[in-house]
Length: 144
Image (cartoon, rainbow, N blue to C red):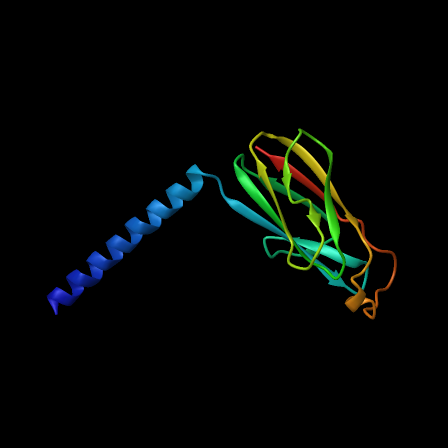
């Protein structure tokens, strides 16, 4: 019985040590965050930050070194555009198919503003209905 308890404790200590190493190595190289664009009936499309509420305008805070992954799950293509803030490279800004991903690594502190330029619905999705004006997706990222 005592041997089983020792093995369980040792396993727990080792697991905690491995978890601590994983966390420290992730923070040394920055972290990742996700914005997901989706189709919806009212306003046509919105986006969500890390699984939160879907909204047309998002205001988020990130740490320097964080990589923001923007995934297009909408029925139309989008192009991610920096409208103001420090110059930054957007990896694959043309989200021109479902599942397309753009990556942005924020190395400098500052306030970055983005919007998307939507294209036309994909031909296979032309039967999907929407109500009201299409949302213009806007994103403000504050990096510290």
